[in-house]
Image (cartoon, rainbow, N blue to C red; front, side, top):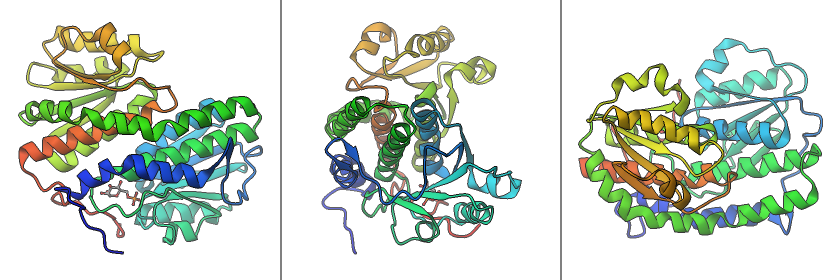
Length: 365
Ligand code: G6P
């Protein structure tokens, strides 16, 4: 099927804007009332002892978020690795291990090789894919489509949020099957997920704020992203998006690692983007932020109204996100990561949909 830009300047802009619609579609496919309906599981999550999650690029950051969900909600230990490392390390796949692969294209060579390695060790294989007829989907015991529709922009946007939603559903299902979530608690979580498309739509309303601050970001040579807990993978994703399409050097750190190195880079020329919903780790992140500001660093705080009220004074920039539950926060905060990268790239005049040296799908090693 041929897709066009539907009036948008770039595929990336169209794909960012489409998120409320595709997320609604994915929820429709996977939910029936208060029940999560997955294709014939074939994998008994009550008996899974450990998971390995393997992917490349943005998909690997979706795995890092999913690790928190599977560990905290389902009590399942998870290891995450990038496929190019995993496949050559010959990691032992102990009995009880389920292997999960995330790939938009379903054709990434390293991810497919890692899948085949696990299949050869007789591990059950789950995949989370956008292209349902891809190699990775075909070679899985359970392939979960993400229903993002065709993604053209090299920088993944709607596929990332749809990967996260699908992984959240799988983690909730596993938690329920494992007796860690009651029917009532599951129904409550499902209610939260049903609110996601509306919240993403609301979050898209920060575009003008992002555009204005991006003109200032475009002047930087280096940019740091910080996040804690479930927001750390979002910081990684924000830095990846930004460097991919604006060619500005960007790096992400877990906020607590700031004093173990990156703080040495902080001066008044380095914007530090802090992704911090007002959650149980907020105060810790704020103290990291203050360390940056005490050294003249320019903090761009992305937070909700409670976070802005508690810590918005004296920051260089502030992006106002809707308030959100901890389950949804990492999905929702993908939106500012995308919009900041997009508008910084526009300000720099780069080729947003086809950034230099990058391919949409890396099918050779
Ligand atoms: C390339 C793309 C990224 C993508 C990664 C993994 O690097 O530019 O956007 O995240 O491959 O691709 P996959 O299709 O396996 O998700």
